Length: 399
Image (cartoon, rainbow, N blue to C red; front, side, top):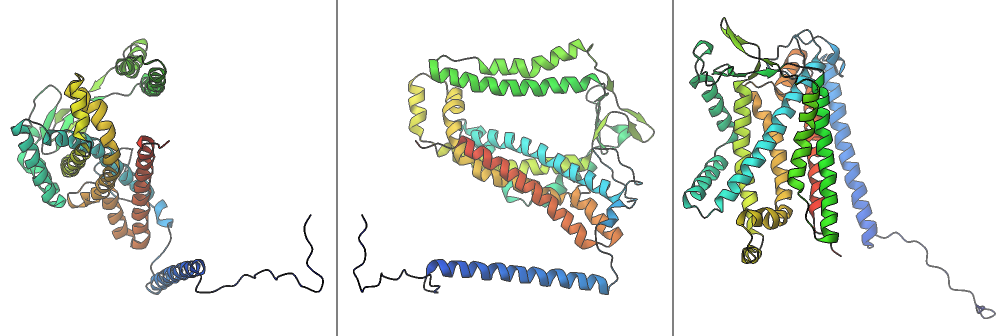
């Protein structure tokens, strides 16, 4: 039973809430409020000043220009496009071209960097020195210089279309690019691609099941060969069931240029090769440092158990090295994507190139720059989100 206060005495007053700058919580809150207010004030000043200047100079603002006819020729497009299309479609072509070189470049640079990074640690003296020379040369030459070099190689060293190199049937190499046969579309191709994706999904869940089975029973399951059979076997069965629809559009020389097939332009090739070689050199050093971060005692223990060096690298070293490799690898992926904007120097129609032409034709620089910033920010944040998810997935979980 609670005791009552003695007669004639008042209960102690509860302490009130007192705001004081001596309180670190109050100071922290005040500083944050002042910082937000300062940023908002600067943003308001810049926006209002920009709007006022545009009105003074009679320059139109807004994104209404996106619906107007562009009249802009684009030499390379992944979707159907003509100069009669709108500026919006032209910018979409630029975005797709940027994503195309970024995605292919990331894949190739990762493969190249992993191979070179492992080669630098090889006991073969010649292989290790050759890998070292490549890394030091590629990392210490400006990327723009490398892009111009490769563009010059593909445009000036290769002959014209009439004297094009013809190594195999249907393939031509000239200063117009690389012409090669392309697959003619067929309705069955949709089902083949769907079977390929289904095979990847089933292989993923099969690997999960095999891992749980091995943890429970200690018995291994041939996941690699099963995954290969699923990923490539299912599309092959659908391909055969659909009557093997495989027809090629073979390029041929007509007049002064090639007709038919697909074309890998010198601009795209120069940009892809330059970005891959440059970024691959940095990834090689990241891979090398990640492997060296794993204690060599684990390698010695695995070799003492009779494991081959290839299995040691694949099953013991690389899974642990990934935890060191992934964070800086994310930065290189972002750098490659942003460095693709240098394509404007060699004439590849990426987002920056098409947006610059749009700005010159419409005079709406603020909107054009805003579109470029929004696209690159979205792509970069998407790459960061995916790599952060993967980093959390492979991280060690403390118990």
